[in-house]
Image (cartoon, one colour):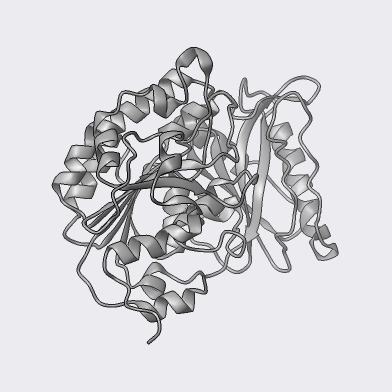
Length: 402
């Protein structure tokens, strides 16, 4: 849908919308576990919510396309994921509130472990501590010296994640990732996608070489893997597009970055689910759209830990009565994409959604899981169509046409 059409239909309202996004919540069946993670989880509150709501399946991007976290979240907020496919580095940098300029090319760093032959044996360096991450960033910043008049800035994010900012004149972001996104292989060489990016690609190669030498004595984080190269640009805000005063509640920096790019205010002083859900209640009177992000479902899926992912779902379930007690006009529970523990990675599989409001069509679905929601009233739809539905159920859209 043309966003200008939607903007033209907006009508003033005081209604409130809550999106609870369980990152990577979707899964596939594991026979010995009795189904998917959602099917195996004990989640009476989510199941009861499904009984009095409209349910369905979301296609994050397009059938068969495995999404990254950036485009899948942009889609949830109603931004075309193909048009707004921003690099991961920008998301990480804005997530830590790093001040970017138009002279910057940014990439996400994964600190990784390589063996003596240079092959990646752990893409996440054992999920090193934040303290180790910060020490390594200082170590790099104190030793890097690129040949050109370009500043190399390395900033810590969380665990194994960091940000590289190359600041200088004439830099380009059209560079392929060096992260192979699997173990047992060599990192990729930075490769320019267009001739104008050749000079920047050479600088990136120089950065990688120097970093490998500087980190050679590290037991775990002895290599940098880079992805999501991009330059900063401005995006239309949710206030401009939907008239929404929006708040994001997220523990992980990258998701705060996505939120800031679309103009949300951000609660960053949260680290546990209890703190996130408390923040929702504490700020409920101040905003009219709320994005509450649960990261652990995705992390446990990437670890291949089925039981731990189930435990996160069950923990979230305990907070659902608390959310319903504050009585949002629209309550959406879903994910951004699937991360089946069986695959240990993001996947292309659709994921279930609950949409609850006073004017939703209640369907026969009794449980919140991938199989049950197939028969829901919402059917299967692209994630980018969720925001118009949420606005309609919040009575924030007027009639189209005469």
